[in-house]
Image 1: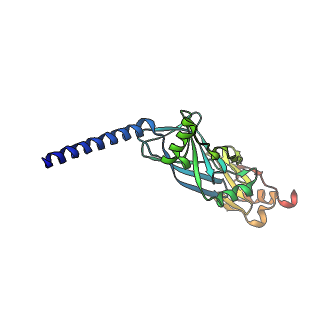
Image 2 (image 1 turned 60 degrees about the vertical axis):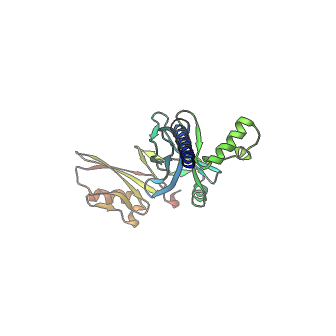
Image 3 (image 1 turned 120 degrees about the horizontal axis):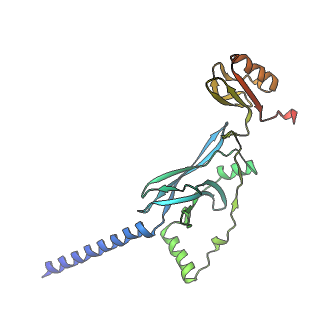
Length: 255
């Protein structure tokens, strides 16, 4: 008798577990839009500028189409990372995807922009889905969803954080011929020969982004003067090679 009762309760418990797993699987597949910000990264390049990136993880069992991604710093400052207006990206179920900005060459206030990133304590993402929904990874947890439900559906609680004003940091992406140019670039050198066309960026220190035959770096005492730099480059090229040298950054004494 006792054994029979135990078997019935075990069977009942198993049915309940299966039911809960089925409901949760259905929720993850069709209802949940859960994205987690796994990590934040920053790549610095003297030639191209700065690249910011976040790694997003799709925590549900259905693919998610993303239209745009913004970086949220300390819940106060917003930086646009990427826009996918024409071709949204798709993150497969339980997979990660790295979103990287185009090179950032400047901002309206460069010192303040870098300071906010370096001194930032929390980095999250604001993800806009192709369906029009917006997900903030910093608020994408169980208790937060209950809080939002009570606020929106029952109108019992006022969420003061929604009234916070967030400042969007305006960024500059300087390009020439499709190449991102940082503020440290002094010259843009274009070399043309019969076979190919090569673009080389030169820092104000004389360091070149690429080497070309004997041209690797320009001496620091020459790079400051445009005419001397042009003569130096000419001396290293063959007679059939034509080049164009554009000065992008003037010396301080010339300003």
